[in-house]
Length: 322
Ligand SMILES: [Zn+2]
Image 1: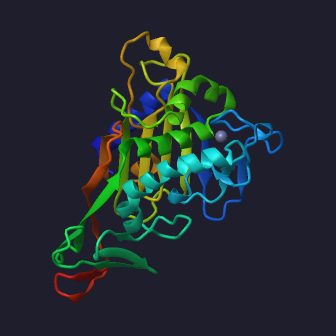
Image 2: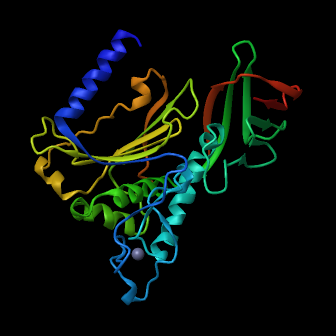
Image 3: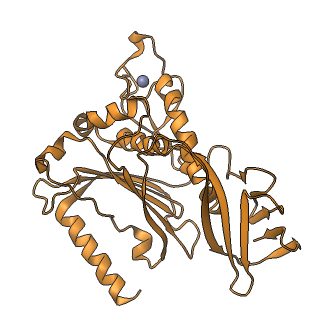
């Protein structure tokens, strides 16, 4: 790794260490045994505060982290069926927001690796092959092929409501918080529970994607970092990190009563370096997206570039296979 980058990462780790402790982390690998958060008996829903005596049920196995990111083993006992149903809208938008990435990166959800399709053009994963069918005149999928360098740029479209995507992440963060820390984040819970209206502050989320490798995280990993009592900088009290495959999301948990320490002054958020970076994988996407709007984004173009090992074309300019 180049010296400048190593220095930068070490500095980031030093800043992290001076401000945060790792509070919880849940690594999930393929075939991990089922793990349930919370108590099986006398269940109360963390999100609506109700229990069975209030007429609600807990029949469904509630994923602590969305199964869209590859979690099939971490569940919670404290999410009722009604809340589970309510949150599924947010998960659907998260799926739409990430679909082209999840397809290209082969992220396996409950129904397998998602295909991308809007009109007639489509991207499917067939075994180890990425099959791309692009039809002339269909604006929903564009492919730019660089045969010499074996690079492919795909531009797809996505339709989603930003604040729904944000809420899908907030829900995962609130689920893995330990009970006593969850108590400090009631405003975030209220935000999650209220009807999705746009908020007048930006809701930034760091979205990262690593290149030059497949499944560079080797697992799904969700973690919460908590501000140290003797933190050096004015930083958010809780930061949520979700890493899987080649993706990583990072965001502060807004609305935490412990953030009042800042007494109205701005509170900082900085990205946490993750393992693939230390292993030398390049970040090919490192952006901050603002997901505060409740206005539906329709057919937003999104580009993904990747290199392919082998290539077979069945009809010039219409179909490509990796
Ligand atoms: Zn509930």
